[in-house]
Image (cartoon, rainbow, N blue to C red; front, side, top):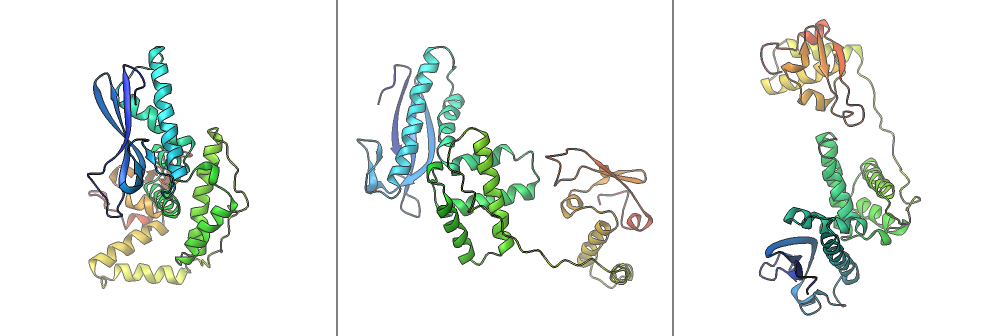
Length: 301
């Protein structure tokens, strides 16, 4: 298929590389000024469902309509790219072409949008938060991929929640994943993507945990256990970290990242990992006598 003298392309499948599930990746082979650029679509299909002449999935293929919709939009972006290039509004390069074409699917496929948004926030959020968001993306991807924004509704979200319940996930685990999906759907609306927001199905249902505070006697017992030297080294170091957290108020993630640079005289100076994306500010914590007993100021904590 020819777009112009400077840009030509074909939509193809990697039929020489068949995955374990029997499908092949669908990609767009673009030639721009003699240079070949391969652009992945994020889609795949069985070779028997691929039409080489039409360069689309056959009508009887699973998810044919959704897949072809995404391919059509990416192809349309190539046409738009050619026009912008001819008008001098876009300077072609392999990276520009790849980004221009692949970003088109973001406004159609929620999976592609969420994946892009998570990656763009990687340096802004704590690693554990990033990991939880990737896990939630996998959960919704395993349920339905691609997932056009036009197909997002209360029924689909309810069925996704039921599937997680069927896998034995705890109520609060599901609630956390629902919160994450709701966050990215809200961001999609903020970015101007129009769809029917499944407000009813995204209602958060949580069970309040039965948490109790340590008593003074329990804390004293742990201090005695730490100092009497009966614990194996590994358990003693674990208890050391826990007690240091108790007497400083630091979260687990901040304890893991703790080092000598966080110690300034009689104070701890820390940028909390959990809130650094929103506040970005540091906190200063006085080192009390008990917390001091867990520090080694001359080596890594």
